[in-house]
Image 1 (cartoon, rainbow, N blue to C red):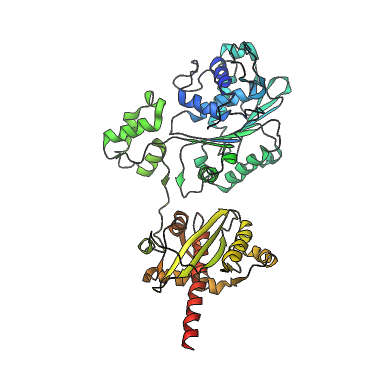
Image 2 (image 1 turned 60 degrees about the vertical axis):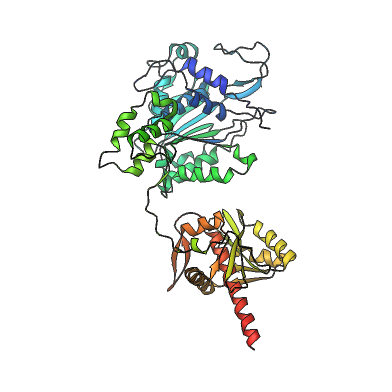
Length: 508
């Protein structure tokens, strides 16, 4: 049974619609009435623990098509964070009403303003204040803000480089990628705008600094809002990294609540060569915003011979698309070796491998079939490396299988722990690992190998490439994790060696 939605979002929506007006654009100065989609996002972003009232979401990612006013929504939320009762205080009593007239239901969470605010808007270029900060400036400046905000909050100290909140309660300011001084900050709210453009190393470093800063003030429950159009696959942007992180957390209910990944795109099933389908895809991508977007003109833009289809899909349909041409697979016949009905032999070799960044560890297995082919399979893949020792110990004690590891590979630091655990293992040197990679490639080419098909192993094969090792070569990667492929490569090499020894013994 799903947990009820306990949220400060209802009062946030009411505060925004009472105190704020639309920022720069066609409807600037007009009262705000949030559509159901953006209102729904706010409800989810301000979800609370039903027992303690603690914020659930520490990072949020709002992914929508170009022109959907993502920065405008971020500015509204930032104003609420700066001035409104945005953190839990108590549960409402029957008949309780807010200062601006919002009527709480009995038991609904009631908020209080933060005692001190540090709200940051991160821009990609040194010369930019950032779209969100420009909108916040408009919403809080006396000449352009609503009468209601001016009446209740007065003239705020609003500047182009900083907004000072009343009663020394903190500030709102833009931050550029060149500003490393924020490493000591204790932020309460951060807007990271258009993170699909955050590709440069300095932007990635700044993003990590900001994420760390959010952890410094537990009581303030600081959080980050990333707004973005979908990323180009393979560019390595912050948005691409956030999506990968969301996928990692998707199977962990406890941790996944901390990251709200809110993405809307058009289905890939639309045939955009047909104008009718093209318009249908745009309506699906924009949802409520389709009413005011010029979809006809956007659809026509694809017919311009200078328009890149991948970028058109990315910006207008919000679809993640490959922006870097993918190299052909180095194991093109891998799919031909698949046997979904394959049963792995009872006698196996297992091997340990891990990603170079320490994020993933894998165990692969291999054994010889009666028909002389090698069978390889994905045994396990999990976060981190340390679990490999415990699992290798368990497997060896239960089945007596040999354990193989690359002596100089990413998990070589586990060798002392394997020794301490009493695991019998064989560590291959660099030349043997190169031999193993060459052998696996040849076995796939010759159909000497078979596998039952495993998504994580297949994914590793797709992203694998060759890397030079002196005058030889071994499996490497341009992106993604190939630890599962490396594990089955090591296991297959040892299993083949054992079979060769058995043949030699029978001859002698």
